[in-house]
Length: 227
Length: 291
Image (cartoon, rainbow over all chains, first blue to last red):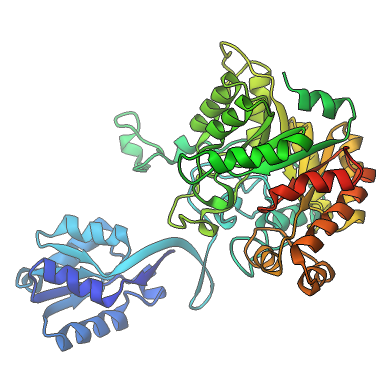
């Protein structure tokens, strides 16, 4: 899931002031931002309270199922058309993808209330860790299911680097060196002897913006597949 | 051609030193450091934005050292440049007459003076070694023929004191398979650990130059243990420097002892003077390595 954290309240207020907004509609997200406790119903309601305490008028709010789903978001916008129309701006408590989906479906200015930080594993409720960069060129088959691109702070494919001490990372305190973890697991699985250094990564697989089209009827008609 | 390489490959015991290019364009202090080190050093490492902090480029500074009649070891880190820039700078290095290369990962930007900078690490040190070897064989990373190849003497870094050893050993072996002919190590405090590293390197026909840090003050020891990536001064040695009436003198005496010990085990020593450049000649001479 996409992990978000709240943007500083003063900055959000300044964004609304820049827009000259006194009337605000708030949109959260029923998926990732709900689980991350940054844009679910309870966070949307506390943002509403905060805005009202600061003298804003909140014209309405919504927490759709998945804010980055364009179809669902269009329905959500239609449902709240009057409330959105009477607002000067829409504050979105969702990831950057959600903010842009909202911006594409309405004409009012949209402003983000969260920072999108990473694609996260839910380690346990309320604890999220970054394990995948979505690089488009997966190496997990060679690295015992541990991603060095993501979990080595330098993103080195081969290691440990010269900063490793006692099996620990030099950059992030209390983090075991990913390359130590990888080599240990490879050894435990009897794969260490066969392990060769990984070749340089193909970053062309990660050229922006990504687009995937898997609709069968478009095959042969339109460029499909991942980019 | 590299006299340093000839010495290393013929089995002579070599001495290398280290200088940092300036933050700015005034080369006076850097030249003075070279003058102090040159009489006892077979080559001098020129660091590449060391400590992830801004300095004049190693490329330009290495050329200055060469023009002073001293052989530089051009250091290249993977932190600041992508594969296009790394390859382009390697070609530049060769055309500038720089024949000795030390390929290292580089400290993370977060530990330096521009912590906001993006760490590039498009290649890692092993991959950079593979690139340099490819250049020596006359082709670039894409396998295309170069108009004019290189013949770098390729070195890499090693940290023999750091555990776990089996993983360090695998790493050293991978670097040698990639094309490394010599290692310069981080500071050696544990001679037993150093000896096992030497065995691994010699088994593959490469050489090891053991690192010596001149611990000039109690403050320097604390700085190293707290701030420098992967350098851990053992308690007994820290206590010896901290308890000394003249810490700088004690640091030099310690370096002389370490140089003597490494003279028995290693293929050379690499002295990191930490500002005590004036003591380097004395360390080398009193250790009985050069007269």
